[in-house]
Amino acid sequence: MKFFSWLDKAVLKIEEFILSASIIVIALMVCANVISRQFFGPSILFHAEVAKFAVVVSTFMGISYAARKGRHISMSALYDLVPKKIRKGMAILIPLVTSVVLFTLAYISFDYVSGEYGRGTTTTNLGIPTYLMYMFIPIGFIMGGIQYVRNFLVNIMNKEVYIGTDALDYNDIKPEDRNIEDEMQI
Image 1 (cartoon, one colour):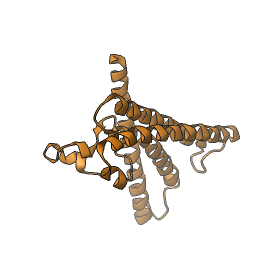
Image 2 (tube, one colour; image 1 turned 90 degrees about the horizontal axis):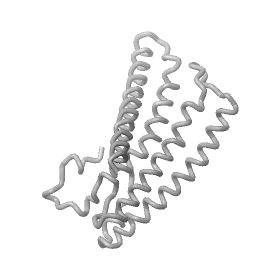
Image 3 (spheres, helix red, strand yellow; image 1 turned 60 degrees about the vertical axis):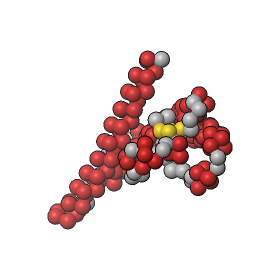
C-alpha cells in the first residue's frame, strides 16, 4: 500500500508539472507572437504549432487532474437537489460510466495516433511528427479513466460522498468547515 501511495503522489506531481509547463508555454508563445507582430512585423512561424501542442497536452492530461480534485465540469442542479442516498448512488454510477467512456475514447484515439504514426505526418514549420503531439490524447484518456475508477472505488469504500479521490462532496461539508480555496472554481 505504501508503494501505491508513493506512486499516486508521484503521478500527481508529474501531472502538476506537465499542466503548469504547458500553460506557461501557451502564455509565452501567445505573448511572444504579439510582441513579434507589434514590433518586428511578421509572426513567429512556429508559435501556432507550439501553442497547439501545449493546448493538446494541457487539455488531455488535465482530465485526470480534474477528476482527482473534483474540479471537472458537472451538471449539478439535479445532483444537489436529491437526498444523500441518491447522491451516493450517483457518485458511484457516474464515475463508473465515465471511466468506461474514457477507456473507449482511449482505444479510438490510440487507433488515430497509430494512423498518424503510420502516415509519417509532420508539422509544417518545425517538422515534428504529429503523433508526438497526439499521443497525449490516449494517455490523457487512460489516466482520466484510471482516476474515475479510483473515484468509483473511493465512493464504494467510504460512507461519505466524494466528487474526486481528493475531494469530499461540497454538500457534505458544513459551511463553517469549508475552505475558501475549495469554493473558488477558477
